[in-house]
Image (tube, rainbow, N blue to C red; front, side):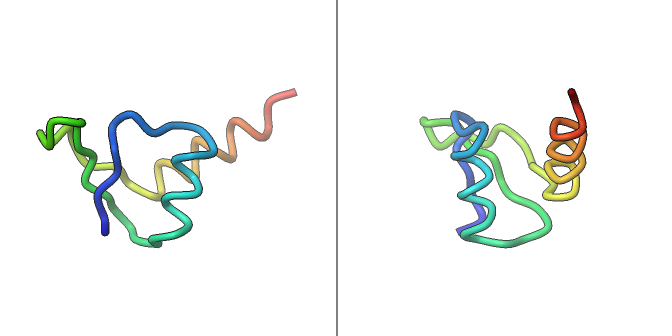
Length: 54
């Protein structure tokens, strides 16, 4: 399933993405309404920047 909840964040989000590898994910609200598209490359870049912080 390439949908992720808009409520996910942090480790929970990373675990979800690792469990279902893809280049993009459909982000949905709890109501089922589409929130947007999440790019795995954007997540990777944000993770690398976060890990580089002192």
